[in-house]
Amino acid sequence: MSISEEEREREAQAQLPVDVWRGIAVDEDEEEMTASLTVLLRKRSLRLLGSLMGPERRGLVIGTILVVLHSLAGLAIPVIIGKAIDDGIRPALLHHKSLRTLFVIVGIFVVVEIVESTTLGGFLAYIGKVGEKVLFDLRTRVFDHFQKLSIAFYEKYTTGRIMSRLGNDIDAISDLFLTGLIDLPWGVLSLIGIVIILLVLDLQLALVTLAVFPVLFLLTVWFRNRSEVLYRRVREAVTLVYIQFTETLGGVRAVHAFRREPRNQEIFDDIDARYRDANMDTIHIQALYGPGSSLLGEIAQFAVLLFGGYRVLHGQMKLGVLVTFILFVGRLFQPVQELSQVYNIFQAAAAALEKLSGLLDEKPSVPEPAPDDAVRRDSWPGRITFDHVTFGYRDRNILTDLTLDVPAGQTVALVGPTGAGKSTTARLVARFYDPNSGAITIDGVDLRRLPSDELRRCIVMVTQESFLFSGTVADNIAFGRPTASREEIVEAARIVGAAPFIEALPDGFDTDIRKRGGRLSAGQRQLVALARAFLADPAVIIFDEATSSIDMPSERLIQDALELVLRDRTAFIIAHRLATVEIADRVLVIDDGAVLEDGSPEQLMASGGSWARLHRAWEESLA
Ligand SMILES: Nc1ncnc2c1ncn2[C@@H]1O[C@H](COP(=O)(O)OP(=O)(O)OP(=O)(O)O)[C@@H](O)[C@H]1O
Ligand SMILES: [Mg+2]
Image (cartoon, rainbow, N blue to C red; front, side, top):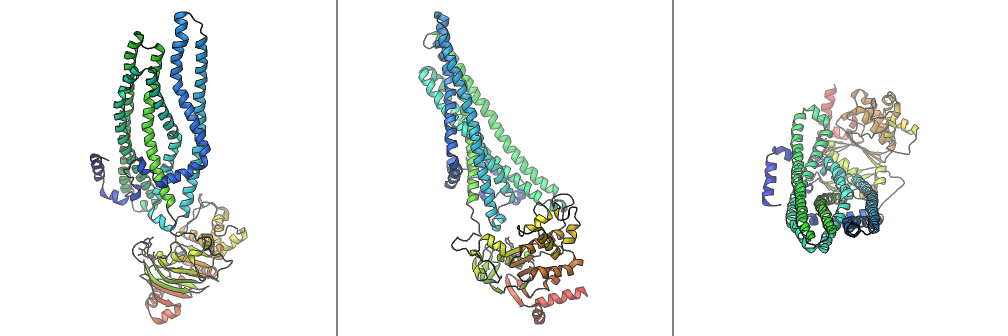
């Protein structure tokens, strides 16, 4: 980028309200470099491209042959027309020869025309198919990869960026197949072919024709450089549009609750205007470049007519050759225009490939164990230990050197103030993250050695925001153990106390939760999640505020249900409601990532520590 452009960009950003950019700053790797195509096409992009195209080699070779045939046929047509005039019409006109030669040439012309159009049709069908296969493969890989990535990834990669990957980046690669792959070989072959044919046909006239080329060249270089900058700005702007869209829609309840619509609208308008302006800038340069290069083409045609006519009149050139020239000059500027567009398409596809390959290169921060290191067992009693565990999400440690032993079958309540590290501890048991040092084991086996399906079978975490998938209520419970029978599903719902409300739904267990009448309240969703966890029947169960939304009158019911759910398994319960904590065998008071008190509820009461104080205050509030 030249200095002035850099300044312009800085200016453009400076005009925006500061917090627009602070609030939805494009992440660093989202900002495209000013690099050229060659730099953008890094090794990993090429590797991705190779692995995508590899299986389609045959289709690509056939496609290339077809496009070469199409281009050659296109090049032959003006030559054949010239020949028809000079060798078919002229002799018949001047020397009263038969029209046989003309018929032969026209016959050839028809064949070449047929070749030109059928090869194009074949190419489009072929490459279309190859392109769809490649895109299918790419989308499958990206989605599969998204699912494999760990929770930590989603904390840094926003939904908007994910949508942008799946949306406009894949579109950019689709454009490559739809237009880029034909325009490039066709453009290059036509351009080179036409120049060579013109030079061979008539050197002098060719030189006159090509005199406009330096100007066209300069115009094209200008357009290419400008469009590189402008299209990058368009891509950046559209990503911002995606990000703002998904953030607003994702938080639509908060948006309404806090009357944030005007502010969001303001931010969106800003981004949207930036997107519009970026697009408008590209339209401006296209409006200059397209007609500009056409004008040059017309000037060249005008020169050909004038100088060519002069040469024909002086017998230095045949009339048919002049016609061939005029036809070629008319066709000469189209490949140049197409090639200048191709550059943008390749540039966008290269940027998309770079981002997608970067994404596909992301390693899950919670990796699967190596096959020979993996441990599978028929049953896990469920003893959990923390062995000198230190963990922090980023630079700051949340847990420092935590050591803990929870025997199989014990119900442990984690209590402590907000931000103490309770959820963090729970997430580590569920292996959403791995400790920075130390180890967490289940029955003496490091969690890192359990393949994910094994891990999910023996450790289940239920959180406050119990997410339900589209489908019926029964589907959502069965999701805990897909092989469960209908009776088992209903039984699970009954045990956690969810059956009464489910049976009252329009279609009972078969109510679609995304349809009208199937919408569940927060507490009902938590009950479904409890049933799901119960049905999964894991050795270790973790409840992080999993009963927080279930109403107070049924508290006794919840206690009973919980006791049933937790029987015979290891359990970690985080709850602000002390009644829930009372069913625990053991209470851990956590603050600042350290265990301050550890014992049975009775022991802690007797010791008179912070738990005892908390508990007494609670009892007084009840009295
Ligand atoms: N995903 C995260 N990325 C970075 N820091 C985090 C993340 N989650 C939690 N923290 C930080 O870790 C600390 C402990 O948080 P944690 O969620 O474990 O607290 P908690 O005890 O569960 O609190 P609460 O009772 O409010 O749920 C907090 O200081 C929080 O800021
Ligand atoms: Mg928490």
